[in-house]
Length: 275
Image (tube, rainbow, N blue to C red; front, side):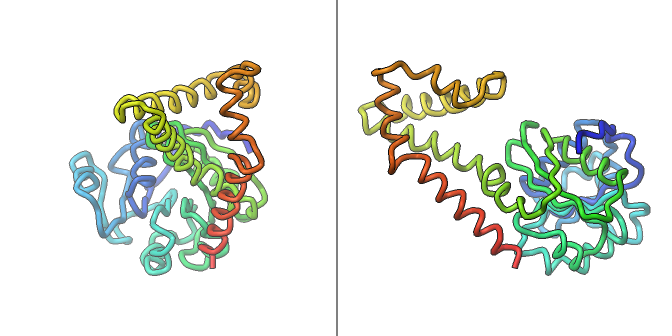
């Protein structure tokens, strides 16, 4: 499915957000930035932060009774998977037969439907959503209508790009690659800085060089029409310093087999969370 191009302001009804932590909060920020009226947003969060409570000053409603909501356009579930079943009875009272968009790692469409009902879209965003540069992969249950898919797409697209798939079994690998992926990139910057210090650089300089190199390279990858392999080769002169480093990173015990094991471990854990 491609983008519906549905403006958020054209969504009829109330958006109910369960959980306004980092990811839920990033989505809410995206909705408001794109013109969705604060008074049509309800946040369910018994442990709301001061920042979440402050949203009340612009009209966002915090923890109202379900019977005061009116028409629910969508319930977006952004609670921790471990807390989901405990929150289930409350969520069910808001969901009804409405669209339910879950961004919980590992939670399956069947499991979400069992706990809170509704017409379920399972999605996996990532933390660059906080700056509008996230990537989200989504899959819809068979009973989700075209209109509801459009609403889900508009909600998710407020924080970056969206890809739709038809095979839910791919979501565990999606979680491992893009959902958890930002942590791998941050670790790369962390370890590059540590290696720079080991090579003799002052800590502050090594940290700045690693941070700016990783973030700048990511932006180049984002803007370039070239694939990542070509960009890598463009940096690598035969017999040069980059080639010497890549010989280590691309060796039998190097980056690729290590990352393959890491992705496999994350995929396995995503499957375990569904149980």
